[in-house]
Image 1 (cartoon, rainbow over the protein chains, first blue to last red):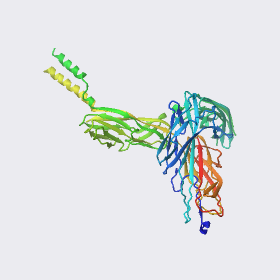
Image 2 (tube, rainbow over the protein chains, first blue to last red):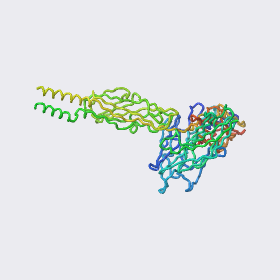
Image 3 (cartoon, rainbow over the protein chains, first blue to last red):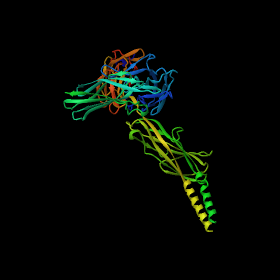
Image 4 (cartoon, rainbow over the protein chains, first blue to last red):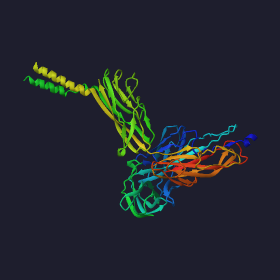
Length: 283
Length: 153
Length: 165
């Protein structure tokens, strides 16, 4: 080894995320739409659109697996993966395939991915779930700041992954959610609301949780509106700022509804809103 | 007694098929379809796209001078009153005769264009365009009509 | 003669009406589109250690100008979570350059390291929430620890960030 190299600058550009500083933003990753894929048994198909907003081609691969969201002890969102779902699990992961599964999306170009379902012949009416992993890889990138005359370079492989739900529906399906255990506490300048949500019906509850904090005069002084999915049961956490609100008694109104502005109307299942409320004291 | 033949002649004339009307027919063949459009990402469909461009056809007589005019929307209408801009470029229309020696002619769909039918009496007309959704464009289906008018001069 | 003239006049009128109907005709198509909301995870800025000296550890914190940055876009106000697969070494053939002590920060308000939430990137799930406009920014930092006799060359690794929606 040349002595000069041992004392020379060792340039390690750990480009762990994204492009060189000199490159424009969005050098890696693709846009994936929609963010929830619905498939109907009548056509056994669905589709996904990928768009590469960057200036470099992106390699994309797509896989399926079975998982569903749950909440952790703090009310945060987690994905519970089942590697080998048994017959009691409404898994579509074994028979929904993406075509193509590997592709290169040129810069500022679109790619349509078809999802095809090959369910078992005796599939019972209902809704079946899978998760898609969309992995985007932009390839190795060189580094800046190389001052060694030997031309030492470093590159890193960058991967970003997006996991999104696939819902396959056969026949008429229904949904519902039961709300219980509604409680609230003040943490700092936030009102933290928890509730136990249990899904009913044959399809996942995909909707919105609305909360409104109302003062004694009937005025809404704080609110939240959070998209929420309940596949089995969850105990999520919702927060809204109560900074600056005077101490005293308030009423929290909580509502679960299937209204969603981000989803097509034809996939939203009807459900009468479910409501609950409780008294809240702000210190 | 002399009036009866006149009345009959009039009725006969009224009952005759409109020979001049058969000289011009205009038909809508295919919608201009942008398909899936991602929020914040504009999408362009060229007039020569074989699947997604809009298509009309009209028939008239060889030798006819025809004026072509589109009534174009500025926005597509979507759910809950949402609108999305649509624009048309100066080269976003193509007229293509169906005769063996016909060549496509690119023209501006935003203006009034005049052609004389020389080699074909049946002309296909294609139109493209661009939609520009906002980053927070409301999701859902959007639509707007495009009217194509042909006038024999 | 009078009747013939009348008929001729009527014939002319009838023909005139017919000619007007043929002079113009129209048809209508629709322009259609379906708007969908995307989710996108993009790497906005590289984690750049710049020049690294043998035997001298180098740390880039999340607030540094050269920390790594992801931009994430999704459904407004929606919860999501992040997981990471991180290397413990960058590799050059049989040579390893240790990397670790990962730090993270996410912010839904803007792409600044203030007013957000610090976290430790790991294979475990870290919850996050998109802003009311569907945005979130994630920053990562780490420490590389070259040995005194660290061999010069090209060191590579892979970092994977997963956003679950």
